[in-house]
Length: 130
Image (cartoon, rainbow, N blue to C red; front, side, top):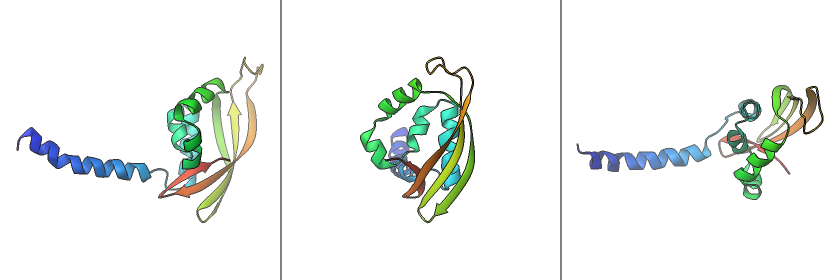
């Protein structure tokens, strides 16, 4: 089989994988939270951005989000304190520890409790804001 035939045969599969990939994502709220916070710890803000639900991404571009996150405090660690799932929505509380920051005149790490709303979008869970 020549190269063109292989490419033509593979093209529909590539399109199908792309379409399915758009609807894929964390299958459980816990998986979403782990991806969301661990990518932020790694300062992989492009991945962190993918965790948000569609209405947020319609208003805030990935470039804007990444720029803002790079200017904010660095997340050192997280702990999910609670997670309550109610059908296609969920709420979580997490303890976030941020690194010391000259910008914020903080010489020691600081831990804060945050609440996160989650929503199921298609087959994936997403962070809901606003």
